[in-house]
Each structure stands twice: as C-alpha cells, then as structure tokens.
Length: 178
Image: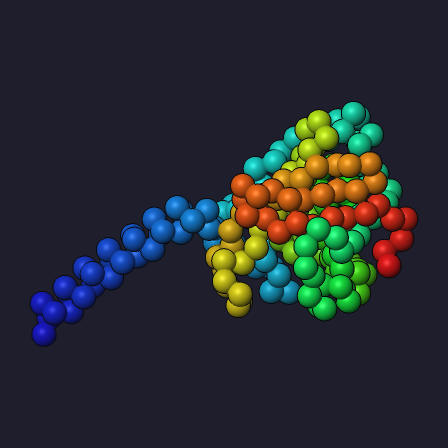
C-alpha cells in the first residue's frame, strides 16, 4: 500500500510541473484578489506597457472624451447592441473599460484592479490595448494577457487585428457616455 501512495505522490509532482509549464506557455498568470474579491495586479501579474503617452500621442486621442462602441463592420448580438462598451483614456497610459449601462456602477475600482481596464500605447496612427481576462468563463485565479491592436481614424478607433483573431470593434468619440 505504501509504495502505491508514494508512486501516486510522484505522479502528482510531475502533473503539477506539467500544469505550470502549460500555464506559462498559454501566457496565463495567477492573480491575487483584494478584500472585495476583485482580481488585482500584483507581484505575479503586471502590464508590459510601461511608457506613458507623449504630447504627440495625446494629440491623436481625446482624454476628455469617451469612445463608445458603435455597430459596424460585423454582426452584433442583441446584448452587445443594448449595452455597448465605453472606453475612457487617461493621459498616464491607462484606460477604463465599462459597459454604458454600468459605467458609474464600479467607480470604486482603481487602476490596480484588473476589471478597471488596462494600459494603452500609441504609435503613429495605431493603438494597442493591453488587459487581462479570465482563462475560463467562470471564477478563476488564472488570467491571460490580451493585446488588442487597432488604428485611430479621426474620431474613431477601429480594432480589426486579424493576426490576433480579434473581432472587428469600432468606437466613436463622444462627450457623454450614452
């Protein structure tokens, strides 16, 4: 009986190693949670985008306005149409992501919270968003890094990065979230 238990412990050790290697290869990371059970950035998970936008970058995007999802470029389901996403960019390189219906509902969230939004980088007329999402659809401690690439076209931001298999998403500049 004892040799079988030791053998099982040995197998479990190898399974843990394989699981860790799998998580690393999938760009997944374990997050910490705050006292409100919100996932937060911590020693295990940080943004790769570290530079702040410069003066020229901030001329291309309006940090006093909101960018609200509009529905062109692909099929949108009823849930998306009834509750579009709104992005608010800050001059320190962070952005806030929320749905229009819930925009002020989570005002307590800080930039260190994963659900706040993420960071952005502008280069030329292109923009890159970095954020984290759960690796599964349910409550989990394992999150993966998402990079969304798009372009700034006047008062619109268009995300259509086919290389990263991103759905087309178009955001229009507005002065109010509506």
